Length: 108
Length: 111
Image (cartoon, rainbow over all chains, first blue to last red; front, side, top):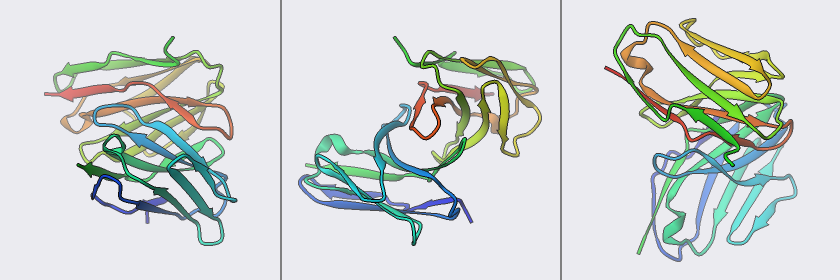
């Protein structure tokens, strides 16, 4: 079993749609959690950190459920520019593990 | 100023050759990484160094040898390159408990 599992996607949604990505992790000792975004042929970049209390950044909301070892990302009012691969990241000490990523395409 | 820089950006080489990829970070981070992203786009950790000390060696063939001369640099040397080594290699760095910053990647093609 992979340490970090994500919805495989791809997700194809119209502009304005709300889309949710899910991620589970296997190691209960994991300490910090992130969502990254990777555009085609580019490096991954931080989208947002994920906190137990949940956090929001504009149209993006991240949730963490430590008991279920589950992380989510909600994107509201999707824009064409949101098209990318979204990577769930789980950290324990110096060990940072990435999920396989979920590809999102937002269409006009 | 580029925070994490790696060179070269592209590398095309023949099977059996030896090549190196260099990485430097100017963020003052203690931890640096090498990740491999294959054709299926999965980003797999290869090595992690903390303050020049090897922390993670993730079942990588011993043809891959990382070297950290100081905590701002983590280079990757690959011996006897194979077709299956073709991938994008990303260097990253971070401070404990915070997010990682990535270099632009080195696209390695072995022919």
